[in-house]
Image (cartoon, rainbow, N blue to C red; front, side):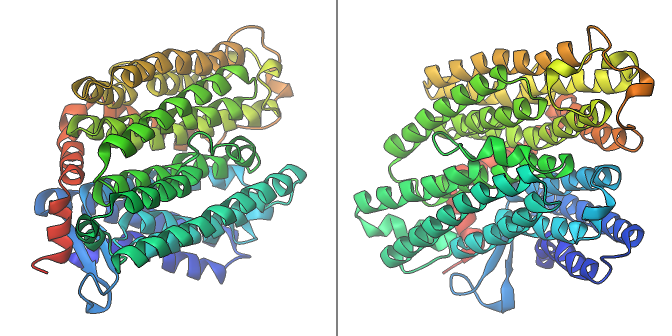
Length: 494
């Protein structure tokens, strides 16, 4: 059953190639994309359960044994994130049918989305640090196309900044990998974990680890490397912003968690304390931006940074409980950020603007939309019993166990400011004076609410059914806290 590991990568890859040949047949593209996305959801969901029952699954590409060959590794952490990716991408795909526009659909939009999923899923599943770079590049090249597709002025302006930043980070990535290979002589992550413990020179390893933190921090938008995020994510259409906001920064955060638990775990007192400081500053900048803006997309974009900081706070605490909370919160945030971006997209469709001051009274004509946004808002803020509460509770509990009181307190305080920022949208956008009568609305919500409801229901189920899901997240945390489990699965008796 090891071949199961490659399906979440192989299905979107083949689909993306097939869709290139049907670029002018939009209805057929939609059908093929939907079927492929559903197959990816089923395959990745089955992978989660299979890993839970049978342990880490390793696929040796070309039957070359690790550490000499390329491997795909599905532990519980990567399986959960791949499964969540497939669900969020399906929702964004369904939303695109009504929101992306025929002009973009005819220029390989659905094909590029599938290639983006290849990059994201591959990054989660690879067991090789160089192939992590390769999958990053597949993801980034797809995102370059998606951010510029349509050719509006704001897209072209922001795409230049986005591409330049990622070119720099990719160059640093190659340099970091080269240094790591020069010191250890291997690129397999499990083998790296073994070899680094044998190097003996902690100083050079710590320097290399900080270089990787800069690379992944730039891609994950942690402080002070977040400057590219607000403008770049605001520029593309709503379904693309939802894909970016839900998935791309999480790949950077996942990479930080992976390398600083599996590879760079020799100088925890320094590296994880440093990550904790950056996490705290990221939370502070995120909430300041979220409460300051009156643009609905930017409010949610800055809340991405807050979530990144909260997730890394769990890594900084470096306990099984805190890491289980971080993993739970990543899954929660991927789902709820996707839902919120799609919901504010519906608001923009109705009003024709993203300026909150020009909205008002939307709940009068759109009560279902209004109350869906209300539930999404309190889930994001971490109000019990919704999914955001469970993740934050575990992170804070783990932080207290590790005596990381200041960062745990900051996570709790951030919840109040996050709640304020999203309730500013709810109170000003849905309540108050109705600024647009039904006949004056700029667009229809037809076909847009179902994908939002799908993600929202999943978030509610994740929170209410936390006791049922917790063993999966605890297993993921337990595995990454004990690198020997991963090493044994990949290298076996070598």
